[in-house]
Amino acid sequence: MSQALTATSIKRIDRLGGAVHIRCMTAQTPVNTADALPVWSLTDLYSGRDDPKLEADLKAAEGVIADLAKLKGQFIASRGQPERLGLLLAQGISLYEQASNLILATGAFAGLAAATARDDPAWAKAESDLRARHAAIGAETLFLTLEINQLDDWELENALKSSDQAAKWRPWIRRVRLTKAHELTPDLERLLLDKAPAAANWVRLYDETLARMGVELDGETLTLSETLNRLSDSRPERRKAAADALSAALAEQTPVLALALNTLAFEKQVEDRWRKYPSPAASRHIANEVDAEAVEALEAAVVEAYPRLSHRYYALKAKAMGLEALDYWDRNAPLDQAPPRRYTWAEAQDVVLESFSALAPAFAERARTFFANPWIDALPRAGKQSGAFSHPVAANKHPYVFLNYMDERRDVLTLAHELGHAVHQTLAAPLGTLLSDTPLTLAETASIFGEGLVFERLLADSNPQTRRALIAGKIEDGLNTVVRQIAFHRFESRFHEMRKQGELSAEDIGKLWLDVQGESLGPAVRLNPGYEHYWSYVTHFAHAPFYVYAYAFGDLLVSALMEKRREDPAAFAPLYEQLLAAGGSKTYVEALAPFGLDPRSKSFWAAGVSRLERLVDEFEALGDLAS
Image (cartoon, rainbow, N blue to C red):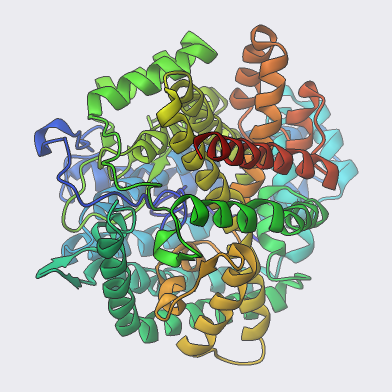
């Protein structure tokens, strides 16, 4: 698969569209006022759609790529000349990175602006037009990775040994070579690149359909995020009303969303067949630099633990709430009807920074920079999409953090998660854009670790009355990150396999969804009528097929790292910083070796699952003490 230079609108989206970081808040009036929550300024990138610098940077990218294009054919012509080939590699990849920085900055600007204005057709058009422009510009870099992959391993090795400047790019070249067996002819690769912007419009349709969707509830028209917030209301009748209203709204949209998902899956199916990928998830495994066997071991360990984790916990929660079973809208409900603890933005900031300081002051200082500058957008508002992410832009720019903050504990954890990403991205930035880009298997490490630090802080400050609620919240976050994401992965796997036999109707997709969710949630959760439509707001299925297992991968990996920290906190911090600062320059096996960890075995994942199981044990014990 070619790696011609293109820009995505959002480079890394965290649990967007129905996974953990669409946080379900209660319906009480938030503590914060609008002017208390930060809204980012993108002027560090560009002042607006008409900023002359935007066009100047696109022209500059074209100029850099024109210089790169002068090297076309020279890599092949330099076979047998390791010194010359080494110099060409150093020069060519450096130019590629320079162009990447310009392209990614313009793409990030459009994507970030559009993320807060999904109801603005002008921003939708700007983002689409820029995507097409990027594809046209970036297509001229296609020859670089194709020529690199025409070289033999020994030729590349000799060239890299001949030049320190070329050897710098060894990790990036390693990642390029992973796709060698799946590349097509130059003409076919160019065709796919030229078609990519049009294909992306199916994702745009998916996003805009959900963003425009109104949910009629209690005489109001709510957004998707606002309705999801009601699913954590302390009052059961309000949770049920929100669930029913959301089901009705989604039911109206599922024909369009099912068509979009079917079309994206078919396009992927065709490309996978031409590229000779052995499975629908294979391209994602390659991008993540992870063995399929490791993912299969992870999936097997989690599925085997369903009865001990989700099935058992939801039965315990039903008992604690005085219910025979939970309706699906009770899954993330508070344990009682008392108002939940609220956190102002200032309190959330203090909790996160103090938690990061407990690991190492340097981590807190990096996070503090984001609060001191307009680099965070936390204010929920009309037109703003759901979810949360940290966008790294490019290594020569600072990241931007996006979330919808509504004052609940889970929002504090979301903030910690995204700032963990931001700290990771800034630590790796000195490597440059190409080497700092981290595969998803390691990209979630700092974010989930950040959540873990905040949870430890909240638990340390709890009293006996609040400890059980905190433990319940932590278990639910763990189930959402591990069990739910593996269930999403299994849903995707089955959907893509079934799609090979023909298009699936919205009803077919809903039946598959109920089957997989029933397996993962267990008999203590009722999947009431209407839940069959809930697959449709998990936008990862459209945005990034097979992305979701990375969350389970990261969560259980972090469990292992947390245990290492407990063994020796002082020795852990510098090793952890080195892991993050290495970005994508090391494989996940190399990155974890200093900690004595090997995630290629099922036993590794089973150990992480056991840590979550121990929390369920504690929850049960606290319930016994209370009774």
